[in-house]
Length: 148
Image 1 (spheres, helix red, strand yellow):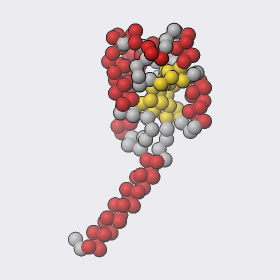
Image 2 (tube, helix red, strand yellow):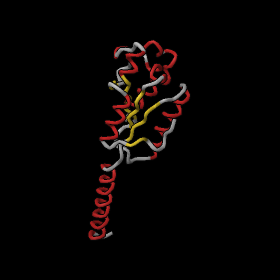
Image 3 (tube, one colour):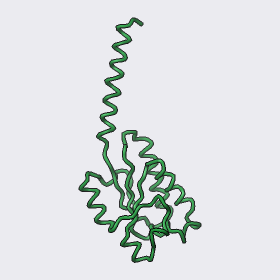
Image 4 (cartoon, one colour):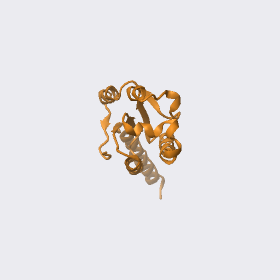
């Protein structure tokens, strides 16, 4: 291969790479308002998030998962042993930046749950519906591939 052809190939690769980086920068940000009925629903949710994010390399931001119903109780210290696999899986997904778990403080107060009762990877928000509104205002979209 002559030098001119090599330079042309390298220039083409640089342009393609720049285009890929631009696509990643414009990737959508998603949230999930979670209201599953049991642990198997959360396991299906995590399966779906892993599958979608593994297949969609343009996803830059983790999917924000907002817990504010009975499923939130699975993540408390008192329920850890019964839900160890689920909580540990959520922690791993959070560490991999596939999800960002947030729990509703209003739900926590109504159920006598304190921040110290939660795993360290879970952030809290004052009120789940307001958090959803805030995320929507920031341009987050309801995740299209995961429904519960």
